[in-house]
Length: 486
Image 1: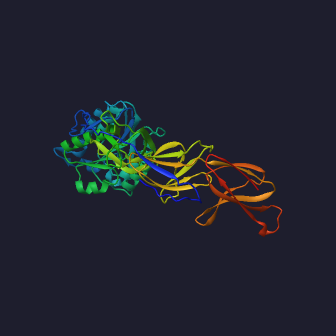
Image 2: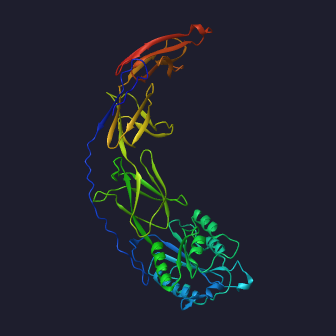
Image 3: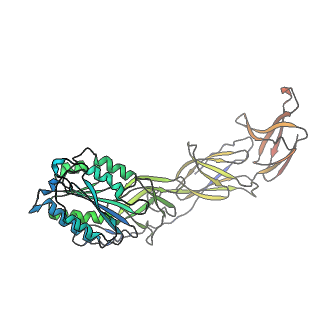
């Protein structure tokens, strides 16, 4: 790459911008990713699921059970209530084998008869507690279909059902219903509001003996909807729901370079919950022994935002994982290197360059000279905070080192013989440009400056005539001390 740099001031030596191309031989090995074996839940069909249990994550599952009058309807060779009870017993028995899971039971439509149109008929019957599985089964066995279907109110009341304070716990809801909302509430609005507040993750909703199209249209905005119109479908759906609720899904985050290969690595990634904005994990991106991005296991119940801490950051929002599948999340993160060098012996206490994306005044980074730093591929505006400042436009390219080298500065040993008000200037493009103020309180001052031709403009402080302004020239040489008296 060639940069045609124009001197920002008269007689200034040409700024060297050298791009050194590093030879990088990276071999992308063909790898067959071995998926983890399916964890089978007793009594449930989980064909095709490729998952592993979520380690060390405590889950609370609130079961909201429909005991409204319509649960008396026929369901195959039995009725909906009997079928739902049988499957709930199996589900609760299976969940008993998970040590980090607590259950609770909320029921609606079971306290007052249908004729009373009771939209407040919802109650937490069994609160969260370890090993309360038998209590839940016992309570469910006593339920008889009676009343209304206040789904929105039941979801809203769950705010008080989940213990608060422990942000590491996953709060989940499994709603089993054979009817739509019969009261004034809106299940979609309530569910979304409580998800946004972090009360629970997106609910699982199982429709029993329902009209699939109508129910799916009504409930899809409130949660993940599943239809069960037979005992076998009900059994399969419950198995899938439990598998997704309690198992992590494999994924790899591919940082794609400028050659469209997932070879960027060694950078921190922050993973957020996309709904609540809560920061969940920080992972330093790693390549595994096969030279491909290492596999992570994430909760498929959540949507994610990912920030990759490159310069500037790469950000991807609303990432959904497909449960039971190996997910690849790709982000463009191709990088090259910017190397800043002062020729000779550096005399600045600390010289930095402000790095900005071309045409954008927002600072990406303030990089020290005599250091190297990686940046995303692209064009950048560089402002070197020397005296005077230097402005350069560069291009960062994949796996290349772009070097900016400036001459060693000189020292200006400035002496005032009288009480002057004055400042240092230079000529740029035929215009007078300010460079630095001269300290009015001191008779002697040392300024580290880039080599070039300058002049002082000033006057005696006591002078009352503007026409007695003076101008005096001097030259600063690289690595030299210039004595200047006025």
